[in-house]
Amino acid sequence: MKTYNVRGYRPADRGDVVRLWRTCGLTRSWNDPLKDIARTERLGQGLFFVAEDEEGGEGENGALIGAVMGGYDGHRGGAYSLAVHPDFQNAGVGKTLMHTLERALIAMGCAKINLLVRESNAEVAVFYQALGYARQDCAVYGKRLIVDDEESFLT
Ligand SMILES: CC(C)(COP(=O)(O)OP(=O)(O)OC[C@H]1O[C@@H](n2cnc3c(N)ncnc32)[C@H](O)[C@@H]1OP(=O)(O)O)[C@@H](O)C(=O)NCCC(=O)NCCS
Image 1 (cartoon, rainbow, N blue to C red):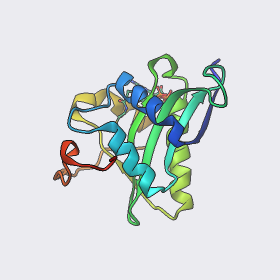
Image 2: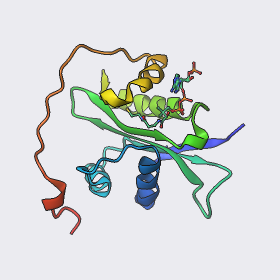
Image 3: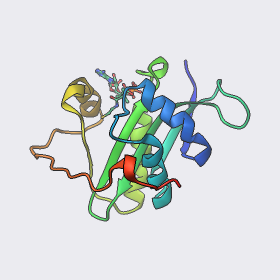
């Protein structure tokens, strides 16, 4: 059985998280993942969690095998960019990451959580349903406020 540990994200995890997102097909050309992470670090809500393989990796940290980003706006919580390395999928890591995020949101007084699933990733619905999530009848509207290519966030 694979053993893993879930802990809060640290800035030293940044590169490993981007590699994990790429491996799991979560990056998009119009989103700079490093800038997304930097924005989350700047907010510092403590809702970013990672899972590490206790047997892998060097030094203080194990190899990073999972991650989930969360957010809370005072009305609702959100889960973003949940990813588990393919070698560790179907071992409960995704469920543990989501439960860790849910517990942290509840501790902040957050009463509900929403997340987005791309139409092209419909198969992941079974995973979320197993965790008690139900599809809601809402249209999602969005508007880009900052184009990453033109932003100087990291400079
Ligand atoms: C979706 C994802 C995070 C699931 O992580 P995981 O660690 O493999 O999931 P778990 O092992 O914790 O599974 C939890 C439950 O969901 C079920 N499940 C997970 N993936 C499933 C799938 N593809 N089809 C059916 N059931 C699935 C498991 O059987 C398990 O059920 P159980 O608790 O009754 O045993 C992982 O597959 C992944 O990283 N996918 C690629 C990135 C992605 O699509 N992220 C979501 C963006 S919205």
